[in-house]
Image (cartoon, rainbow, N blue to C red):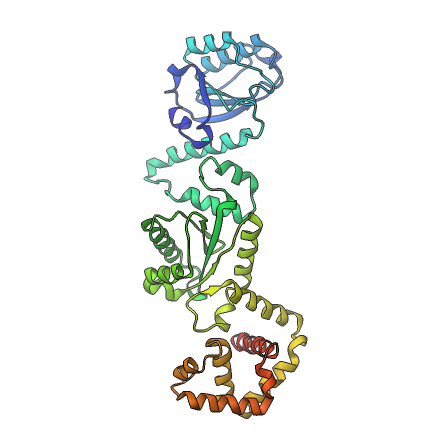
Length: 397
């Protein structure tokens, strides 16, 4: 029973009687909500070790019935009694009940009074989890220190508000405190490698632990999601440092970084954006080490156009086809210049091992072919979308 009282869900509960029996073994948990008329010394059957939860809702005004309950539980070697909703139904624990429980060394624990927002299920879940853990310890199985963090991430992404409420007894942070997400996707050839995923997850956890940053990390639907609170000022450089820390493992991953989160809805939206685009964004942005929100949004736009038939950009696709058919080297130069190197002639020339004047010469030829106006906003944006779609299409062939 003492171990149960250490559970966060029972951290604000009070032992009001029977402290001498706190060494009783808890082997199960049951709910009592029944009429007091069936409660006599012959009607209650138990194998012992039961932790009983109740609000005495149907017999809160029958002191004798409550006394019979306590006596029956104690005779059956049950572990104790947890009383919910005190002050709402049963106004207080009667003095006679406390005296009897003390005499029998039968623990009575009271949940925070005048509260109806802590259901039985929270306590049942945590107590049963503790029971299972203790049973499995004989097989040398130990609960992972990060299991609660992982459950927190899962509850957020499942939009499981009941679990989030229950986990609030464990987690110091609220969902609204989370500001940053890192989405780590395993490339297709190693997507089923469980040991590798475990190694990456442990490396990520160690990385943030060593920096005294509380990061909630978990494998969720085959990828890893990391959530970090507003207590830490996480910059883009952190992603590069994390990638360096992962070493060769990072070559097997695609990583997205999103900031500006402030609610459950924004986290869910960010996750869905990552999930939808993460396989395609590397096909567009081939030289980036990681991807930001605007990269994902751009990819989302391209994927939606492909899904809708690309009719909105057929004109720009035809222009690109014209460039490619004229000279493939011109098209490659345009592609690198516009998408990979952000209109930077010097970086484009370095990637092609050409002098910058040679690159500028090619760009001028392209302008002569399709018109100067195609390099101005908004036409250049449409050209970039068309080039991105062509990159995605090339991978589908």
